[in-house]
Amino acid sequence: MQKHKSINSKQLEKELGTGSVSPVYLFLGPEEGEKEKAVKNISAAVAPSGKDDEVAYARFHIENGEFMQAVDFAATQSMFSSRKICVMSAIDTLPSNNSSLTSLFTELVATLPDTTTLILTAAENRPPKIMSSVSAETYTTVQFWHPFDSDIRQYIIKKLKDHAISIDPQALQLMMRCTGNDMRKVDSAISKIVDSGETIIADYFIKNIIAFERDITIFEFIDALFEKKPASFSLFKRLQEEGIHELVILTMITRQAESIEQFHSLCTTLPTDTVLRELKISDKKTDAFLSFTKKYPREKLPGIFHALYMCESSLKGGQLSKKFIANPIVTLISDMIF
Image (cartoon, rainbow, N blue to C red; front, side, top):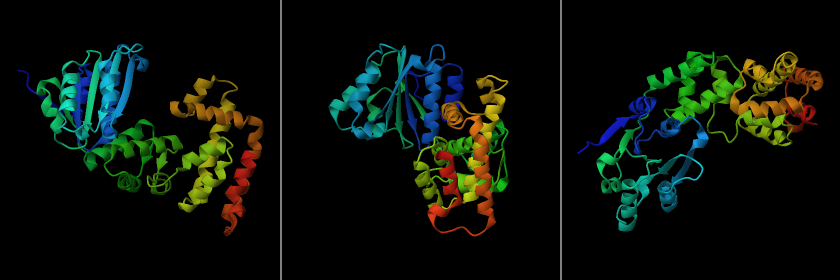
């Protein structure tokens, strides 16, 4: 009889790199961010030619009563994709004392189509009771532990270095306090830093930008502003209430305007795709950035930079009025969207 296979997340990554994929996985442990990465890696490994549309993917929340839908999806062949990935989140919430559900789960695992990969997740570190109803050799257990601080520190430094970004020790320490050992928060923070365009990260940046308890981020405000949305006013007010300094906000606006100016200048001699790479615009930001360049054509930029200069002069020139409408950023927003 084949022995039950139990590995950690690092071992899973190595196995997937060789193309080895189990039909059924049980993901255990508290590190949800790493589980998400593992699901993506499995999806990439099962795609016959590396194309996402060749894999039909669906996630079902068992705690919300979606078990029957999950079984139906996992047990049937897809008409449009050659492979399927079915994720059953919180499988430990499936009642193990319900004989009909247990029988159905047992039958699903035993008769799972070769084209389906089933991924079961649970937050605990031990297998849920429902797993005792299936043969141990039919699935692979993968343990996801929260990483050590030293591992997170090296991970952040490496990821930022890949984008030619350095971070000073104080900023790194503060960032780790903000994110804790939650890798989803760590990756989100890294993404924000990369998207900011900064190449040297100091602690003031972390204080003002990396704040997960906030309802909105400064990036949402910047996107709304360069889309010329009136909601920019209310978003700015909320940033004010959250203690984001006006000069930090102005810096982010100016940097985006400068990127648009560079885009228009470079596009006179280079193809758009080349310019986007030159400006290090990420794929997920491409559509939004191109929309900004259309709303702010080259001939309008001198007026925008004049408004930015006037705003900076007002912010640095004296005490700000407590009236929202009199704030220089509000004036700048008006100049930019109307």
